[in-house]
Image (tube, rainbow, N blue to C red; front, side, top):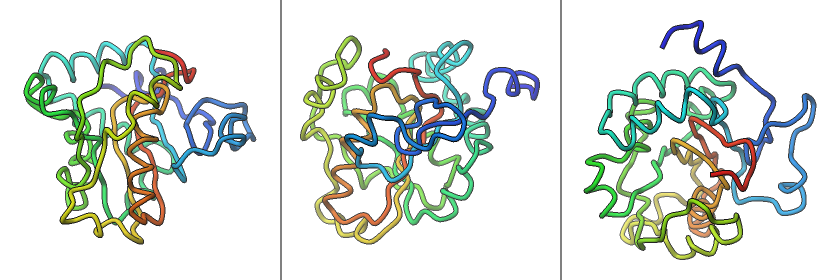
Length: 209
């Protein structure tokens, strides 16, 4: 991944501070987040989910090419505010996969990213996916949120580990935000002091993909 490609295809862009949608310069939050604040205190994305990144991410997730984690994490780490967020975090939690999908893929792409972003702070066993859900593709945002109700939980014997802590939630792609928001609600209910969502790519519209 050369510098010229990064400059061309992953330039820094103004984004909503709580859902990472692209915004005009000087605007801090999108209208939807102002009207209905999400459970994230901050949300960061390295780039838009646009060519060539969908192909790269598909190779990473679905073709067993875990080696993509290193360059994608490097690019994410260079995005604005990512480095300070990782330094301030007490815990970095990868978004968990359901057991069946983990068996199919052989690895959790969010964990591969997280452990390269902050290896000493990453904990893949604290946040759990406890319910299989139908595929999210094709669903509207409200349907995605309903689909993910009660899908996440904290390891019962370690739930107190998030109380009063600054948490970074890591995933590869953010579409509607339903997955990150649902997981963040679990962390918020357990007393997390600050929650940052951190993704490599963000779709342009909440209802996309």
